Image (cartoon, rainbow, N blue to C red; front, top):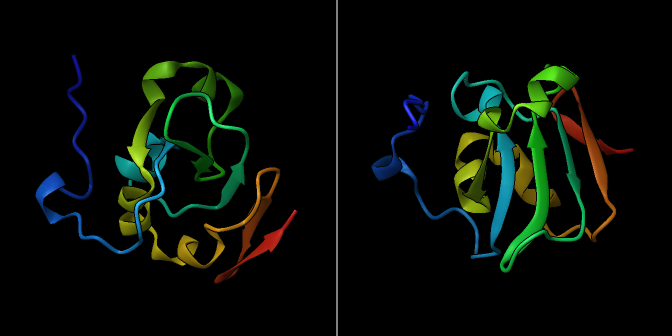
Length: 107
């Protein structure tokens, strides 16, 4: 049973990008409210998977190994949590970015 309390209520999510599919994101972003610090794009794992993965950069390997700490979201939802990701969302598969200050740098 999912008892997570998300920082942004479902009804408060606005359309801020064109539809591009799903992604994985850490609870550190959606529940704890931390900004995205590391994001990468890989081949999708399911139909309509954009391949994007969003992390706060504070997650340990043990944290990431627990499937309860990651969920599938529409990329638009994560863009509501951290709009600074929007300029990078059209990057090709294989792209990785890390936040340095207020901008993301390609890894």
